[in-house]
Amino acid sequence: MPNAILLIEFTSSHTECLHAAIAYISHAMPGCKIYIAAHHQRCAPFEQMPEVTDVFPCHTRGEKLLPNLSMFRSLRKYIKDRSIRHVYFNTAHGSLCRNFSYMLLGSGIRQYGLIHNGDKFLRKSGTQRMISRNMTHYFTLANYITDTIHPHCPKPVSSYYAIHLPTSLHRQLPPIEKPAHELWIAIPGSIELKRRSYDALIEVLNRHALPSNVRFLLLGNAAHRNSELSKLEAMANFPFEKYFRVFQRYLPTEEYYAYLKSSDVVLPLIHPDTALAQKYKSAQISGTFNMAWTFRKPLLMHNMFRHIDDFQDTAFFYDENNLIDVLRKLPELMSQQDQLYRLHKWAFDYQAEQFCKALFLTTATNPTTKSATG
View 1 (cartoon, rainbow, N blue to C red):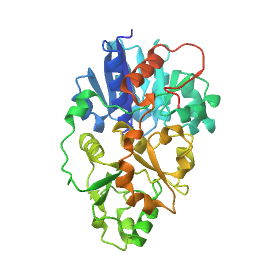
View 2: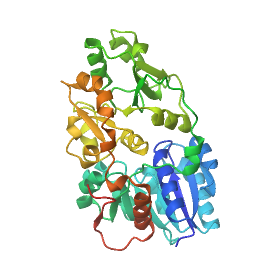
View 3: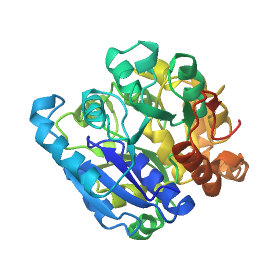
View 4: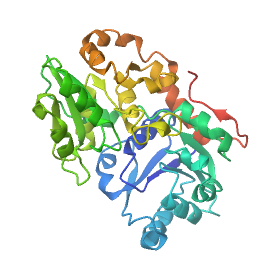
């Protein structure tokens, strides 16, 4: 059994995937020390986790090698000083991963990586080919993504579902005051029209009224420079606060999770005309999916996703013509939610075991290894 592993995330994104990896390793491999190298702005939650042995803050400066060389050298020394033999890249694409993975060559360290965008293989990215030379094993975040990239991936690839939190993080979630009569529909992520079809939702609400107890929670930072909240407010012919609750600040991890946990439904708002819609059907997931799966919340999904097993077991479906009807029937649909999340793949023990098997017991063969059957 390995005695230590370093989980790396150079960017400020995808920390929810690190949370799941920590939960799985600490559960299935209790004797393994977990070290974290995280973007310096995202270190605080990891420093509070007893499952984590130590945290290395990454002061990442862009994507190029020279501005990050000093940090890379310090991190390499950190790995050597702690006799770490397994390194897991939480984002296994891009220049940061490529450059640091090559700095580990010749050290005998086994490198693993999580692919967030399977299109890197479909487009035959040169950077991805270079990274692949150093990887022992790749992971994706859903079975359907593994199916897409496996024929194009030169290394073993398996899926795991980043849908559980470390016990210590669960305990840190603050209480959220929610009026008992309100129905909360969470829309996670940045408030940008290229990412979600907010305009389609506004157009529906312009034409049709919803019960007064329905609230859409826009969990992105409405004050961010890229936020398009003002455009949404301009589209609406109703007082925006009638249906929407917004946050004029970045929600810390614990508070963000607490609002998701308190919500009734999660709405990704990915429609056929959403910019990345086709990728979300085959090559990558939206973080919204992970968030719903983590807290076992029903997803409200466009029919374009109905063919995917993961959503058949976790979602209610709609299209442009019946969205208002589905929204109005949500209380009735919620009474059926005990029929969701019935596949074995959602079980914590199963995910922890499958993830750690692939991580630490990788063989030289290259079969597609799924975390669960559909």
